[in-house]
Image (tube, rainbow, N blue to C red):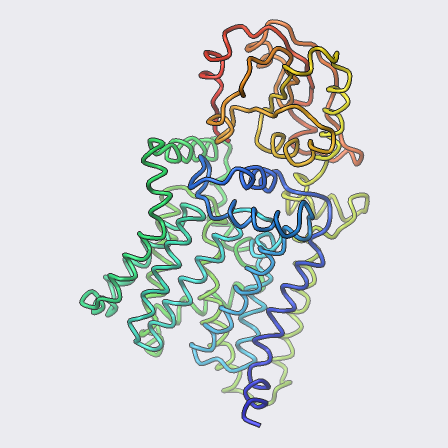
Length: 502
C-alpha cells in the first residue's frame, strides 16, 4: 500500500517527462539532418579528445547513437529527446524543493518543456542540446544544496560543470555565476567544506582530457571562438540578446512565471534562502550581455526561475481558492495547453513543406530550412563523379566549402562510393588533404572567384537545388558545382592557406 501511495503521489513526475520524450521522438523524423548534426556525426566517426569547434562529449554521444541506430534520423535524435525529458523532470523536482505541490510542479515542467530553445534542443543532435541539459543539472544540484544544506551536493555541481565543459564552452559563464553566488551569499560558508573543493577538483578532472588536447593544439578553440564571435557580431546575430529573453529562451506566456521566480529569489524575505539562484542568473545574464553573446545561450538558466515562479503562482492561487478547478487554475491550464500546441507546431519539424503554414513556421524557426536538400546534394555530386573518366577517379577528391556539405557527403556518400571529402573548415583542415596529391577536384560550396583563386582550371558542372525550392544556405549562396584541375600552388602550400573557421 505504501508503494502504491508513493507511486500515485509521484506519478506526474514520470508521466510528464515521458510525454515530452515521446512527443520529441515521434515528431523528430521529418525533413532531414541539420547541417550542425551532419558535422557532429562526421566527427563522431573520428573520435578524439577535442575538436576545433567544440569539446568531445557530444560527438561521443553521437557515436553511441550511430552504433545503436545507424543513420536513422529518429534514432539519432533519441538522446536529445531524452535530455529534454530529464530537463522537464529536474525542473519539476526543483519546483518541489520550492514547496510546490503537484499542480505547481506540473506547471513548472510544462513551462520548461515548451520553451522555444528547449523545443529545438529536444530535436537536434548537437552540442547545444546537451549544453542545455548540463546547465539545468548544475542548477538542480545547487537548489538541492540550498534546500538540504548537505554539502555533498557540491559533487553534483562539480560533475555538472565538468561535463558541461566537455560539451560546450559557454559553461564557463554558468560556472562563473556559481562562483559569484557562492561568494556573495551565505553559501560562502562552504568554502571551509572539503566537499566544495572536491566538487571543484571533480570538475577539473572531468574536463582535463580536453584541456590537455587544447594545450597540445595551441588552444585552437580559442581562435575559433574569437573568429565566430566576431562573425556573429558583424552579422548582427548578437543584437537581439535582450528581446530573445522575452520570447525565445522561454515561451512568451510563461514570462510572468520566471519574472515572479526571479523577484522571489532576489527580493522576498521568504525567498532569501534562494538568493544564490538570483545571483547565479544575474551574473550569467550580465556576462553574456557585456560580452555580446547570442540570446539563446541563456535559455537553460530559466528552468530554475520557472520552478520558483510556478511554486509562487500555486501559492498565490491557493490563498484565493482551494478548488482544483477554480478560474485561476482553469486559465493556467488553458494557457499552457494552447502554448504547448502552438510551440509544437512552430518549433518542431512537423509542418509539411508544401503547406501554407511552412513560410510562417520556417521564418520563425529557421533551423528547419537547413534540414532540407542534403541527400539531393549528395546525389548531384555522385552524378558528377560518375561522369569523371575512370583513369582520373583514383586521384579525385571532393572539396567542400563548409562542414554541412562535408558532413552530408561523409554520411550519404558511402551509398555512391564517393571519393574522399576534404575541407578547410574547422577540424577537417587538421585532417589534411589525404595521402595523395589530388588532380581532379569536385568543388562544392565555393563562389566562382574562390574556386579560381585556388585552381587554374575550373568548369561549372551543376547548380545546387532541392525539390521543394526551399531557400537555405546551399540553395541561395555558392550554388555552383565545379570540377577543377591544376592547383595554383603545391598542395602543401595550398592547404596551409585553406584553413577557415565556421
